[in-house]
Image 1 (cartoon, rainbow, N blue to C red):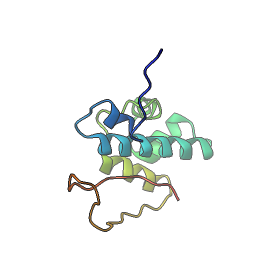
Image 2: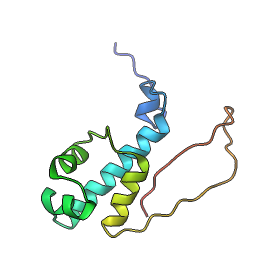
Image 3: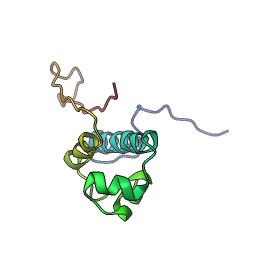
Image 4: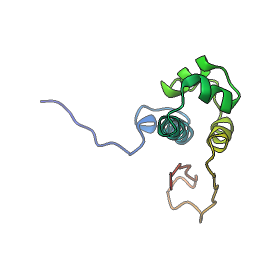
Length: 107
């Protein structure tokens, strides 16, 4: 029999990353950016021009190679593509760890 473990909802936490919320937020933002690029039918070259980066970096971004991309930079890309970004601080964390949680949601 194969052992199955239920996911926590964050694959990066399940893999033991030290920064799972940030890693998931970056992955979610990259997915969202890629969706916008596809929706606008932009080439990687055109997207690179809008984002102020070179085409190979756009290629890395859409392939999920996010080393070198900070959360702040990814947020700036969303804005450069014509979308609003809202950052909201909610009530204190209800987890036993006392630590908050970072999440990216597309409206």
